[in-house]
Image (cartoon, rainbow, N blue to C red):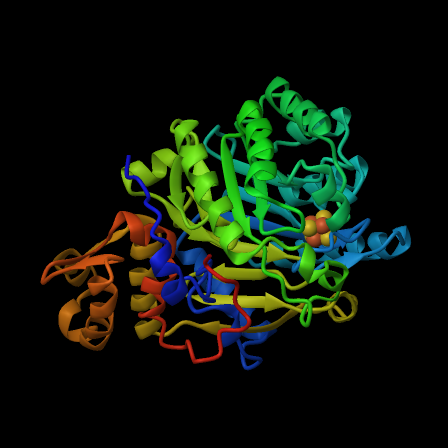
Length: 458
Ligand code: SF4
């Protein structure tokens, strides 16, 4: 297994803002010339491929606001509003299902949010029944059905019901177990509740449990985060993400509840990150890439080892080669070489559905040049290496001619030790692995000077 090394001197130059490349091009390139009929045509054409399907269902609601949150969510206790949205989801499932052949099995499914477990067991059961009627589910163990669960609103019975419905992976927002931090970010959940859900998950046969942690939150220190890591490691989640908190109160209103003076300094944040990486690797976790870690026998670590790792809207993944059909407000589908995004507000989403239309509002058909760039970025983000001859042969180009400008722009990164660059390949070094985005950004032809909409790498 490859390692990762920490070189703080590179962070100022390369740790800045940039896309996470869960897609390339990013959603900023979508436009409204791509509409419902474009999507319908592309979806129907995709049946010729017979590719399996991946489904994403977006539940945007949360019961309370976590102050650090930068997600597109709706904080509400209005059950009527939620029911209205779920009714529209059912209608969208019905409309979308008319576009895809029933031979195309669903091998991957994800419920994300917001908070999917805002919905009660009955609502989730009805949605899963509707989905499996509309899009036949793959029946083998290889399928990956995951849901984000909120430890504050998920009961033991719900864990059993979700398992019976076919979910085999759960992901939990843990963030930090320290009480002062939890109070400061308005997300209070005990380590005991999380441990109990982990036991449930094992008892009910879930294949993989994943935790999200965040560093850079108010009142965090190296030693406070170390205690959180001790508790997390004791629970042994299969996958872990350690995200950098981006404090952008001018963009996210909730973050104005977090006082600047309570945030850890930049140097403390870097120390927390360094300590987290070292501690997780010492505890037996494999560094996957960007902010992700996994146990060596987890599918993600195995996929990294055998070169089949993928990247999709949920981050790193093991399933490639499927068409992604996404349902719900702001959800993004990825069919063949096109992206389609649904209406960005629930009002617009519901209005479109109630008028009998698919809620597609924008998207793009990716051209040949961007398809090549997407594959280059995929190699960098998932495999840490790109062999020019292999890429040239599989894509029908002469890599070094086609990307001569980019190769020139990579030279300073090679001089700084992020990559090794020669006539045959680009190879990410151990100290470049934390800064993959900077390498990928060289191949992004849409990136302009303004990267303020993106998160920081470090
Ligand atoms: S962090 Fe999750 S639960 Fe909290 S407000 Fe954001 S989407 Fe909702």
